[in-house]
Length: 619
Image (tube, rainbow, N blue to C red; front, top):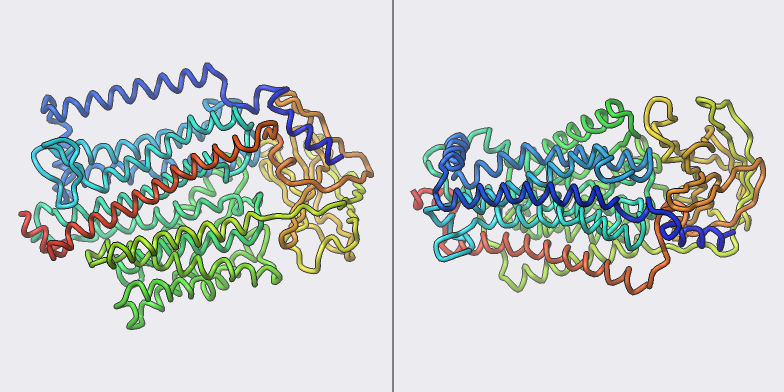
């Protein structure tokens, strides 16, 4: 049976067409639209640079007067803040649609893609605006020379670069699907480009705002609540942007070991909250957590209720915020790097324990006691490293001096290595050999005429499931969204243990229509699944896996069942090479963000000026 499932997965793209990329007419339409829009924007930029239009400069000047920032800062930031939430809404909706309905009929058939594309395109435009707008001035000491008389602010370059990186993920995603089929998972390499570019763009926004603070038109005018709110909004966006790497856990459909979830929470919390507390002052970490909670709650309700798609929960980050605020009361905050490291340690221990109380109550899969030793072994070094990175970012944004170039480069490299090592460890799994389950299905009351069943399951060997597994559950997903679908297309049943090898259902699950119903097991590094029901899928050439009243099937690697559209019929080196290309692009973006922060810090600190002093001198 395991061989049959693997062979079926390997031939899906070859036999069908729907799992291997978008239809060519949709590709042509999207490419044509991108070319037209890009040409119009280039033409507007050319007219502005050659002084043939003035309306763009007038709009920038108006924004600058309102915010007391140069126009090349004020207008791009206003555009960015107005559009980034659009991309986030589209992203959550897109994930929810894939969870509830499965793959797209095409990129233009998914309404969420329009929100993502518009949001990311305007994100890129915001960065390019900052690059194009400066005409008769060098936008600050850190500006990058483009031509003899054209200089661009560092933040604008980084925002545009992050936006371009994210946008490139769309065509690369189609190429990826044509090569390897549709990997229905958030952590597909090209998917990470989309969310990584959008998330890291917030660092560019914060640096651009800092450049604007150094070059305020009216240094005697005190920044009011509006400017503080702009920075807080950007930091809140950073919290949300870094949190989306764990969205599969939020829906309860994670395809990776549970120990990764707390590590991802620590990673996001330390970088965003520690840098925010250093920059914005007392109670800012708590405020950002409240902001992130409000935004994610509105989006979750809108997607789950308004769009009738599967609902999601999300990390609270309150425990991390409490730790950050309390540690900021100590004298150690005067030494930001040491304070960041110690606070990161507190977030990875006390903070993550407080977060576990929220996870236990709200999430599908609580953090079981048996995973805590490995959890801490991964979260603590990531927390310390994230705390140091957050402290260095906060140091830059406060206008204070960074460590020497050799030290800060070493710290960034060490942090990247630690995060990569922890992530790699979390991805290591072992599929148990000669393991199977005997499943007895009992029909329950039908829903909308569709067959619903409960399950009585016995595992072989009898000691397959340990005393404290991360999950033993039945996942039913991709059954279709809407009120006529149980759970809007998603049902997760955490099984009840009767004996060592004996588990039973707590609720009926669907075995009809387009539902994919799978028995899942994760116990330490052991992770595997077996299909209970998989529909006939002519689009990818996949046969039905039926759900008789009684059957015995072997456990197989989860990816062969959950990512049914994915093709394994390719040379292993090709997948490795494609992954390395995406990795290289990602490291380049991270390096660019580190370079930009260091450049802004070095150029202004070399003059020995604070943002207030530099603005007065410039005026």
